[in-house]
Image 1 (cartoon, rainbow over the protein chains, first blue to last red):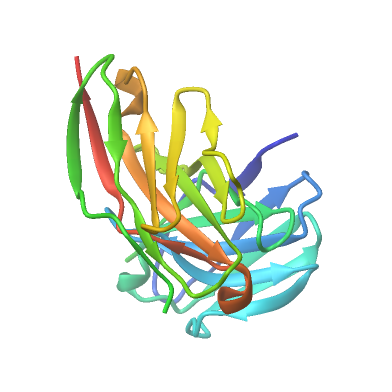
Image 2: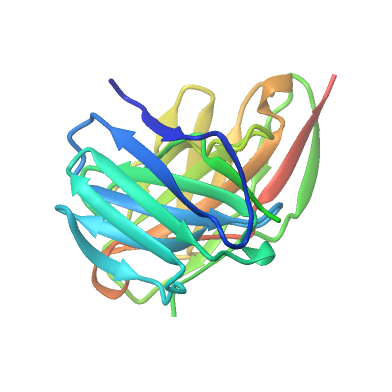
Length: 112
Length: 116
């Protein structure tokens, strides 16, 4: 299995909702990442987990809360988002932090 | 500071011709990796090719090759025999071990359009 899966593919939520994005990989990778991407822009790193511990938080607002329940799963919990948080959210994994990253198909999030 | 520069916001190429996408980088880290990713309109980032800073030979993967010129700090992507399916956004990225903790730094991207 050489892929990263993400659910849901699309998500529409109101500013008062709580939702979660899910990411899964079964490649035995020990580093996992969340990125936010706006149209026609490069991905922006949000969080890095290394060996299931949060190693990098790029000063992301607390309305985004990551969780790594085990080495294969990565969640991103969303609460009280703003319309400007609407974007493509990409998950990625790599063997270790310095190796090439493999990305999932992303979740297109719209905040109303 | 670590930086990736892609100076071509958009490019056109005729089908079956070769095309070069430019990428220059800046880092003081002696150990780093350079990556190219393709992002079609569907959104998924597809890993294409990797070049390590200590690799003596240029990386190749099928129709993709990376023209690595260390002294010039450039890592251009060459796509041979372009196909319609190559139309996408292409991102150059760098990961440096000591100064970035392995974080990927992306360039602004080049949008490639392949004409039939």
